[in-house]
Image 1: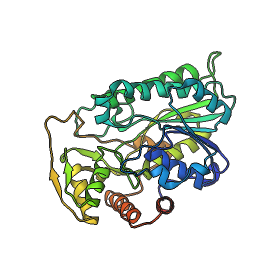
Image 2: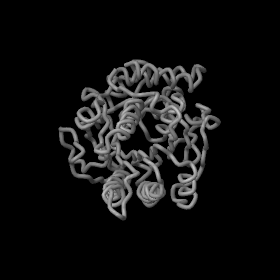
Image 3: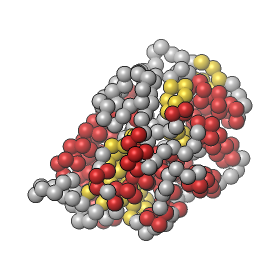
Image 4: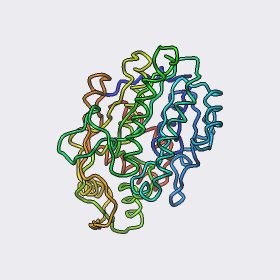
Length: 360
């Protein structure tokens, strides 16, 4: 077992999650509820692609302390909810998370990701008790030079597309907020412990987003159609959704004990999981037979072709390492979808995977 988490830490803990209706947010909310946390969610309505939504399939709205549907740009409502709920821990996941969509909606992407984050941080300034704040960004915050070695937390921030650059801007905002408002001088407060988590290329059951390779592949397989692959030779550090979520929970737990952990952390898979899109698709087809077609398109908007993260800081400071290999990650993901479409309940499938992941 690589991620030594403490379920007792979360029992009765007041946890506020933005973006709880999204893919990662739904998994995180379920995990925390399973451990007895008191959870309030704040998000837009879940996107339903083809009548599929993980949040709705999990049926967890009734288990939340509050299920708030609103925009992070509504600062008055946001501030009121945070003040009323008075959280012990905040996980800020809400974002516009898609690269291709960011080209179509650049202004909305910047407003949601940057101003939305600043609104959350500003709404936390008046809390009168210790609160752990973890802002989730992405592995795409780095100035991507398409090089062969892994990016470290100290490497330069950047971003070619509106999504990546907006998330890099979020990291700058976090650093500024930490130095301006999370210290001990007269204009600062020591009640907030603020860190960021950088992860990406997350796969797992229940993701039905558009223009993401695994949901697109599953939709094609269900319809007995070839999988159309637009960038077969791009490489990514593929990881199961439970890997970074376990890292977020561990970081939050340890931030309670150690204020020196208020920095940025990468959470990525085992190095052997840095595979091409083609390898990912071929591994999927080992578990769900089908075909794929190279649909490389020179007119497609730019996305980085090489990306890898160093997780040395998470290992040395948190004792965190990835649990599942590339093969296990793909197997668990495909088996989740196959079981779901055979009639098994999404909630049971997710709880079963969480328990098996924790066991190692």
